[in-house]
Image (cartoon, rainbow, N blue to C red; front, side, top):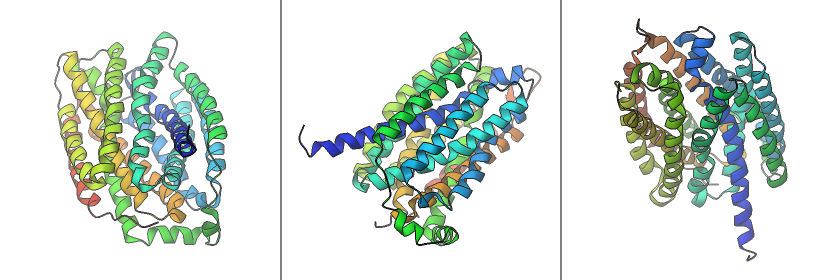
Length: 402
């Protein structure tokens, strides 16, 4: 190996372990949704209570992430990631031991408190370590975590839940957290270059510096709109597929396996296209595709399983793909000395928008006498409109030097 190759190899190793962090906390969030039909039956709850079970994670993540944003740039990023990730792993054990809807609700809130901040730190680390010329590809690697979680994590978790109990996926996730935590400890370098500038400024002044920039405010609005559009639709895909489209619960792993596999290829391709053709242009194309995918899936009637798989896979590819240029836009819009606080505030805004979308959608969606979900198509129209609004907002975000 040439000496010049070593930093590149190290860079890839760090990206892979960061992707591992993302996989575990995304899987923790994703496990709940395909298990929706089982939870609704087991706890005798309707769409509204299930929507709150999903959204309590995001509301908790938003609150804690907002508080953390005042201090996150004042600590070594590696140390912050290790502490928060250890606490997140402990919450998965709590979820596995929950014996009622209320206990599971508390466990989800605690998981959100730690899991929501993890994304902010991961993206801040990518922004600090990777030059902008390669950042699209790097984000494509890290954001492949959604695809891997869907391709491997969700089918494995559903199989464990079917073979044993719904608690088994959370025990599996706890073990994954232990392995990934060791990888972070071993591979991630200390990251302290941002500390001097951060400690020279009071935490409140740090927040003022973030929010006083009009470019940052536009980026936050863009981020909120994008996540609102996605999480109005995503939590109810599995319940809708089972109740309205005619997919059997045993076939749900196949939907995630196919969709996740194709998404894994899509996000890497979108990452390379982002570096080659520009963040805004690629985002516009993929976002338009995601709007069409949402309209299609939320209006899907009873169809053969292969059409259900194709519709869900198209949706997953477009939804995941659009986040790659979107996050490249976000990380480029802020200077390194503010990046940790900015990304933490952004994570809170994303989580708040996601929770509001999921809970709002649960108030719109109903259930008829036949057990089918109603008004999911209305939610799809609203989500598509929000996606089109995000395209306009993306064109107003400017890259910041440094």
